Amino acid sequence: MARTLVRYARGARMFWTIVSAVEVAYLITMIVVIILEKRSPISTLAWVLALIFLPYVGLVLYFFIGPHRVRRKRMRHNRSAVEVRAQLDAEIDRHPRDVEVPHRVQLATLAMRASGSLLSTAKHIEVLGGGKDTFDAIVEAIGKAKTHIHVLYYIFEGDQTGTRIRDALIERAKAGVKVRMLTDGVGTSLSRKFRKPMLEAGIDYARFNPLAFGQLLPRVHLRNHRKVVIVDGRVGFLGGINVGDEYNEAVSKRDAFRDTHVRIEGAAVRELQFTFLEDWHFATNEVIKDKGLFPPAEPNEEQAAIIVPSGPDQEWESIEHVYFTAITQADEFIQLTTPYFVPDDPVRVALCSAALRGVRIEIIVPRRSDSLIVTAAARSYFDELIRAGVHIYEYPRMVHAKTCVIDGKVAIVGSANLDNRSFRLNFEVSALFYEDVALAKLSRIFEVDKHKCRHITKKMRAKVSIPMRLAEASARLLSPLL
Image (cartoon, rainbow, N blue to C red; front, side, top):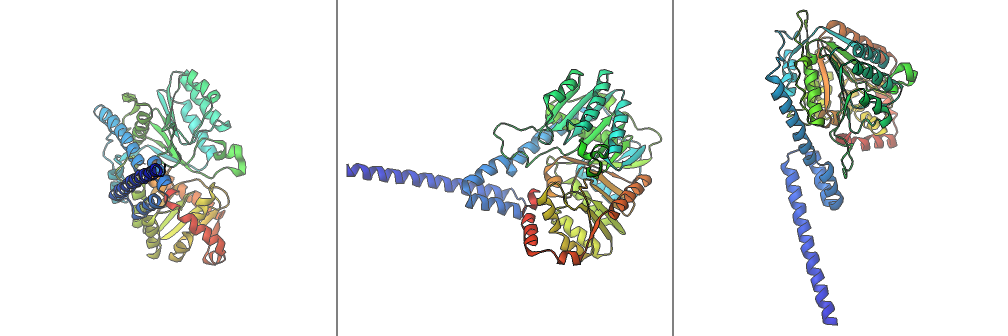
């Protein structure tokens, strides 16, 4: 009996020795794979330490949200982009008539090469400084649609504002206009009751990258953060405003988010159209082939504009490169508004360097965003920026606009925040334009917002308590994920 127990014990020890050896070999293999991916040193070190100290939890997290999963999804979306452009480029002339970039030629060149978009023209660019004006303009444009309407939103709520937009779409769908609506699979969750009249009216509805069974932490990666409406291929809307009562001053009054959108009319909408069609193909596997989607440029289109899409499917982080270059090229001033200010090292250094060489940099952020962690992380950057000469202003309520004016000569407006998630993980789209009236209005809006803000000074920061500084520094550690 004793000998039998000894044999069993020896066998068990041998079994667990083999299991342990396999585990160690697998762990080493995974670490080597992560190192060979040549990601940022901080990201690589974080994953390696997670696998060493939390081997089982680390492996599960890496399997579901690690960079290999991002790469698989990136390849899927990239195939959609290639297929859509291959089938449509042969049939549709995307090239507008000759147009010159009035300022910052290198910035325009970078935007086009990094994003794959073309330099386009616009007949009219209108800045919409709030949700009410934006929703009114969108409903008006929808009401004039003759051929098609394309709608793409990260958040589309089934509330009073969402119902108004939905009903406007239903009215045109019943009149024979083709309506396609795409929403993010996580950001939007519309009830069957809300969707039923849409589907009955003939509206095609799809969700971008919805949750899959067994997927953990689905909010982490690959969200479509764009907010786009396209009407007849001639009128387009983009910016920071989602569809919901919280963005609408007419409904939420003083509690509404302060946000900005733009309305573009002209050939530049064709590049916005391509962005929508790529996302639609990714979600539905359908290539929409219709020359009516891309009307030709009109003779009186004189304003240069570039639509800059960005996402994990691209080789370059195009919107981050645009911001970095715009900051480094600034001569006089930068007016920047962003709800989530968690800059990575290149953008942080660019801001400090520009301020140190005499550029007046003003940044508006919310006093308290809808994320306490993001608010704390943002404040962890204030001390260095203020020492460099950057002026930081905290808006009294949630400001959700993503705008930037450089020297009064070029502007960036879109869906991208100044954080790692927008630069590298989300699908975003911004517009780069030079139109004088639109630039002047953006600057006026910035000045009005600034006068409502609290100017953060060195003296104010010196009074921040040690526990609060610790909270800020701790939140900053999560910056790569925010």
